[in-house]
Amino acid sequence: MRVSLMATFVGLGLAVHANATDASIGDIQVQPTGLQWEPCPEYPDAGLSCAYFDIPLDYYNASAGNGHLLVVKANATVGESKGTIFMNPGGPGVSGLESLATDGPAMLNHSGGVYDIVSWDARGIGPYTFPGDVFCLSDEEYDSFWNGSIEVTGTRWLGNFTNQTDIDSFYAQAPIIDAQYRAFGERCLQGPNGTTLQYIGTAATVRDMVALADALQGPGTPIHYWGFSYGTIVGTYFAEMFPDRVGRVILDGVLDATAVATKQSYLLWRTQVGSAEDSYNGFANACALAGPNECAVAPFEGATGADVVDYISKAIETVHDHPSASNVSMMLLRGNIYGGLYKPGQWYVLANETLPGLLDSIFGSDNGTLDQPRALSRRTFSAQHSYTEPAVVCADSVDADPNLSINDIFDEIVNVTREVSPSFGAFWPIPWHRCSYWPARAVERYQGPFNQTLANRVLVIGNSWDNATPFSESQHIADVLGDQAALVRQNGFGHTSIYEDSSCTKSIIQAYLADGTLPADKLTVCEIDDSFEIYPGVKGASVTPVNAGKKV
Ligand SMILES: *[C@@H]1O[C@H](CO)[C@@H](O)[C@H](O)[C@H]1NC(C)=O
Ligand SMILES: *[C@@H]1O[C@H](CO)[C@@H](O)[C@H](O)[C@H]1NC(C)=O
Ligand SMILES: *[C@@H]1O[C@H](CO)[C@@H](O)[C@H](O)[C@H]1NC(C)=O
Ligand SMILES: *[C@@H]1O[C@H](CO)[C@@H](O)[C@H](O)[C@H]1NC(C)=O
Ligand SMILES: *[C@@H]1O[C@H](CO)[C@@H](O)[C@H](O)[C@H]1NC(C)=O
Ligand SMILES: *[C@@H]1O[C@H](CO)[C@@H](O)[C@H](O)[C@H]1NC(C)=O
Ligand SMILES: *[C@@H]1O[C@H](CO)[C@@H](O)[C@H](O)[C@H]1NC(C)=O
Ligand SMILES: *[C@@H]1O[C@H](CO)[C@@H](O)[C@H](O)[C@H]1NC(C)=O
Ligand SMILES: *[C@@H]1O[C@H](CO)[C@@H](O)[C@H](O)[C@H]1NC(C)=O
Ligand SMILES: *[C@@H]1O[C@H](CO)[C@@H](O)[C@H](O)[C@H]1NC(C)=O
Ligand SMILES: *[C@@H]1O[C@H](CO)[C@@H](O)[C@H](O)[C@H]1NC(C)=O
Ligand SMILES: *[C@@H]1O[C@H](CO)[C@@H](O)[C@H](O)[C@H]1NC(C)=O
Image (cartoon, rainbow, N blue to C red; front, side, top):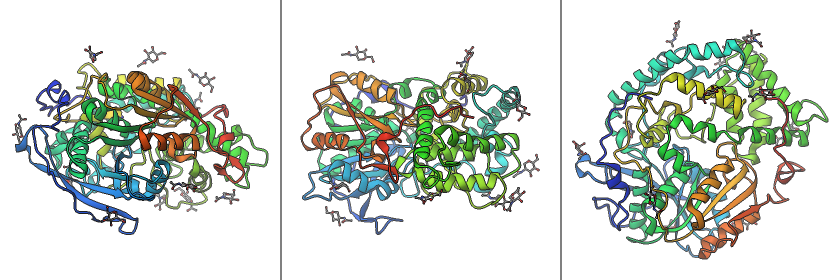
């Protein structure tokens, strides 16, 4: 997440579009009929069905032309389908197809299996939707374009970013990044995807979903929706743009849409990493509980969480002190740790495979193939050098502040690292940090209001220690929605509620989907099931975020 080549904001005026809460979706009629389901590309055997759906590029300007979405469906598994839940998996940039292929069974299980789950590759994503993946540089240009900058090496820092050598070398990058990001913005605009950048964005994605619902289940029908992570922005905007269409809406792993819609984007990272250290502590503490027989980064029998952190810290320090000694960059190392925290049920993969592989490379015993880092999201799909994330978050972003400089952004990063997250605060690149340089804004952006009267109440879910979306954001959105929302705090780790089992959370989701019932209390705390284990014999419920020592 990541300011000032503002070029193509061609909206007709936000107020006009944003208040279009009448029954129509926009000015333009979209295909009114059903979809032709067929086997899905790439996942023909995943038990999914796919279809293409035509969309206007601009819901208020027919002469802009048309695009299409790849739509994907996981059929209900229990009895006759009670209808459809639309789902956005987050990112932005996570493919609906890939997400249902991976997590569809978990989502069906969580929702009780009685609804079909329909997702889609939203604008900006993948090779099947148009406008799809966003390319600005060819693979050949990529390395030379970013040659030597933190864009490819990551930031070099330790602990709370107090070493003056690190600080100096970081600020020495400011003019380099400034020049690269300006040139990059120009390249994107001049490149083959330049003219469609303004048609990507969350407001258009919301209208796409409403158009899709009209086609699948009839105009004006209530829309059931489940949004994860960035998908909660889609969900919140949907509720505010189409309050009369709100059926059952679940916001899980919440990003604060009111901040995203109104703040300079580089300020969002501070909140987003608010629980990242808690999550890293949980990972280390779980590993310590498991011991070296189950967790490969527990250095010895009886090791504590702090010992696990120290063991990993040696690798971070080595990469810091000898950046050229291996081909593991700070970005790769920290990015893999952060990315490995998303799914507690797979913490063992980080502990047993990813980290040992990286450590072997760092300490020189193996130079094998390494995983790519995963930053903000489970960014998937084919294209390695697609700029979907900035294309979406920056298209939605407020206009760049002409007084904002790259040094302001760098100051914020240093502060976030010192004050919020020493382990991940200075991670680079982050899409939000790019937005003041991004060369386009969406033809329509939703920037409020956030106080509409909704047709139905909404369910907001946040984990206590979510590495990518702290509970404070769920709390905030639940507060903004007031008595139109019920809030569930799932007392566990990971990004969104589905990666740890909680019968309590599941039963709330299932009751809500069945007939709209929500807990009477504004806040319900749900524990993780005793049966859910992170390592053999290590119950998820017994893992705590208690400080596992100094982080480097
Ligand atoms: C899903 O259900 C539809 C009928 O609604 C059926 O045509 C399709 O074959 C089913 N898809 C799969 C993968 O079973
Ligand atoms: C509508 O789109 C066309 C084609 O891109 C463009 O030339 C025109 O300026 C747009 N009109 C408005 C009002 O944005
Ligand atoms: C969800 O998974 C649990 C555990 O595997 C199983 O007992 C339950 O029946 C599943 N529920 C549905 C609706 O698939
Ligand atoms: C960018 O171009 C590629 C290749 O033609 C295409 O697949 C993709 O949909 C385009 N994306 C946008 C945003 O126009
Ligand atoms: C990067 O720059 C260095 C020196 O400035 C040069 O030797 C190297 O070939 C460049 N690499 C690429 C991929 O352009
Ligand atoms: C993880 O690694 C340990 C060795 O440290 C091994 O004993 C254990 O079986 C591994 N667990 C899994 C799930 O791979
Ligand atoms: C700061 O980092 C530099 C470069 O890695 C190192 O040489 C120096 O010893 C460090 N200074 C302190 C006070 O740790
Ligand atoms: C791994 O790479 C490093 C640096 O390139 C090299 O010094 C080391 O010998 C390599 N190790 C192996 C096992 O290839
Ligand atoms: C790591 O470095 C070695 C030797 O320098 C190289 O052969 C290998 O391809 C590199 N691995 C990765 C994942 O970049
Ligand atoms: C960063 O912290 C310093 C010292 O605490 C403070 O003076 C400065 O205003 C902060 N900058 C930002 C962008 O928060
Ligand atoms: C910096 O790190 C030290 C040691 O880890 C810690 O005691 C101190 O509170 C941190 N400073 C800030 C401003 O977070
Ligand atoms: C809703 O919020 C807008 C500003 O975002 C404000 O002008 C309006 O008065 C609010 N309406 C209600 C009913 O509170």
